[in-house]
Image (cartoon, rainbow, N blue to C red; front, side):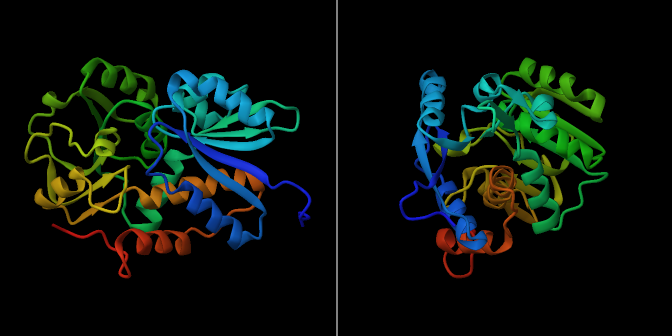
Length: 289
């Protein structure tokens, strides 16, 4: 056990903006549950200050970092070595200091998302038509794990069509994936629509055509908040049987990072329920409009 005279191991999340982050609360709950002694903070770090902030954090004794929007691709380039899943998506959301002083970069977003969709929400992804909105670091981190679930089709739609097509080409060997512009979606309908854009962070909604979702389909926003995001509201209006935010994904990906750093995996269910109650009240449900 760490003595009172020894400094606690330091961890943090870097992002820009970062004020909305629940990661410190999540890791505090993980630490309490597993009997780990650590401190975890949130720091607003702009992209142009990222490398200096990371070097300083580890030089001053930090043990591990999470990196969120818009720093994941910068973290990939900064890591000394990366895990296979981070190498595949070229984005890193977790940095871990190794015994030799080098930084290992990993990406726990995709596995966290799939665990939330399949284990917590009970969705079956095999044979389904999936639409991913956005082609940035958040989308990069989830494509391979989604394709591993063997959907019938996965489409990436982005404001800049060429970026979506390029991203789809990078993952084409893993399954039936294509990319294009938001205005190119046409009349195809999807069983699951995932919002991986940053629009929800500023209270905005991607420009979406009507009738994208099949009757009884699912909408999932990788963002989360105390109020339903514009995308969740769009999902309810479109007739979604389930319109869920990314709080469960956040907890699941955090558990993966915690295990990488501390060698023990916390139970996620109690933490998800605790955060849902803190955000939405005793019943833990996001209020429907």
